[in-house]
Length: 117
Length: 111
Image (cartoon, rainbow over all chains, first blue to last red; front, top):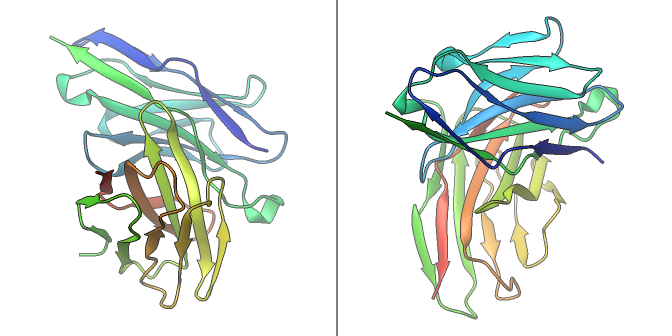
């Protein structure tokens, strides 16, 4: 079964510093990967997704992620964070029906990013 | 505007009561999902439906029930059999194999 591991439950950084939020997945079949952001008491908003093609994916708010099949990783990065990036970030994976998967989206446990002034 | 709505935003329930959470979407999506979110646990799938009049259990379906009589609606009932129902509940919809759109969530508290 698909599983997603977010290695850090909390990441504190200073404003304008770079940040990397780590995500590893387990799957030997084709996989679709996603990063979502959640602000307090709100739903999830999609930051970016990898379905196929270029392994470097650019998303909203200046975030990007790189799909690394050999390391089964999909780490999220931003070169310079703002106070407004403070939120919880979720990595998620699914195996497409067309590749024998179930379309169920499996989430990591989340990483709380806190940007300090 | 297209999107997903969940109501109510906050819900309080006494022990032993059933309660139904509403989820409506006007995105014309075939698939709809219910997730439960607990602090430090991420999101766990309760039920999902890929087509009207059909749904499947997710990873933590015990104590919950759903129906999918209309494409736009996927209500979730939290029954008295759910031992620890206090949580944040998120509904989502999608076109298969693509991004999922999430509603704003319902926070359920058992008193």
